[in-house]
Each structure stands twice: as C-alpha cells, then as structure tokens.
Length: 231
Ligand SMILES: [Zn+2]
Image (cartoon, rainbow, N blue to C red):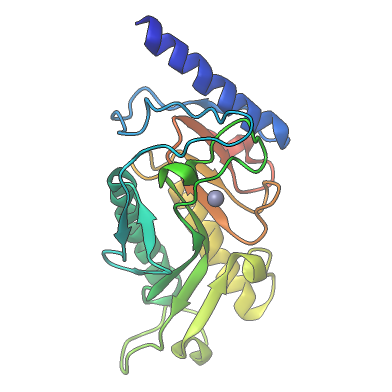
C-alpha cells in the first residue's frame, strides 16, 4: 500500500505541474468509477539530462472505422480508446454533415519526449498513450446520399476540417466546421471510457490541435472557461 500511495503522490505532483504551469484548472485524480488502465502504475518522472524511454508495448494502428493519417503508433490500451473515439467522431459528423470523415489527420502519437510545458515529467506521448488531432478529411458525398439538414450543396464535395482554421469560425462553411469541432469536443469530455486528458485551443500551445491522452489523472481544457466542463 505504501508504494501505491507514493505513486499516487507522484502522479498528483505531475498533474499539478501540468495544471499550474499553463494557467489551467487544477488536475484531478482519475475518476473512481473508471476501470483500471494498463499504464496507470508506471512512473512519469523524467530525470535531468538523458533519460530512459519507458519500455512499453506499441503497435501500428491504422484505425477501425476511420483511417489515421499518418497511422497511429500506440499502446494496445490506447488503441481501444481510439476505436471508441472514432465512433464519437462518426456520430457527430453524421449529425453535422450527413456522413463520416475518411481520415483523422494527426500530428503524432508515440514520441519519446518530456512534457513541453513541464520538462521534469514524461509526456504521455512517450508511452504511446496520446494523440494530437489536427482535423478530419471528408470525401465527396456518394451520389444520392442526403446531406444534413440546412447544408448547402457545396458540402457534397470533399472538404477538410482543421482545428487551426475552423475552431473559431463564425461565418458560412467555417461556422459549420466550428460547430462540428465544438460538438465533438463537448461530446468527448464526459466520456470516461474514451480519454482522461483533453486539451485544445484554450490551452497554451494547442491552437492547431486537440491533445487527447490517458494519463493517470484528469485534466480538461478545450474551451475558454473550461472549469465548467471539469467532471
Ligand atoms: Zn500531444
């Protein structure tokens, strides 16, 4: 029990460092009603100077119902989370546009590195336990397939949705893409079975992407004033 409480204290310090470095809300322990997660017990400290990369299993994952471009390189536990993420993306895309995207454009998954904002700690990317999502690519609508209500015919062609270009969109097509991205983020936040950490444009360094991971603590900052979405 002593080891477990020591580990919990270390994780608490990592969460606090991440939260306080960037003016974020206080991170909280993972929720008690969650199932145990394979990577929860691993230390996250990064020694000064050269450090050893954690020895964890990774495998290439191209996607189940959507394709990742580039393919993800992740721990098997995180692969399950990504498959659930794809289902949420599909649901929100069908509601918004009438069809699912073909591709999840990502800026990276596995990368053995420190947290950029708190270099005493390993990034969840170092465990293959995180993904940076830049946006989604949609193919043209198949002939005869209806668009979602209210969309003009231009949405029948293929298009791209990007966090950087569309998160703050207010007019015309950009406003539809903003609604898609905002609805997707809002739908993911309460899903305890998908991700624990969700960072987006409201968090420093995340104007261009969503960062999602399964760190052993809970931190949400996607929307400005995201205290309201902490659960
Ligand atoms: Zn990231």
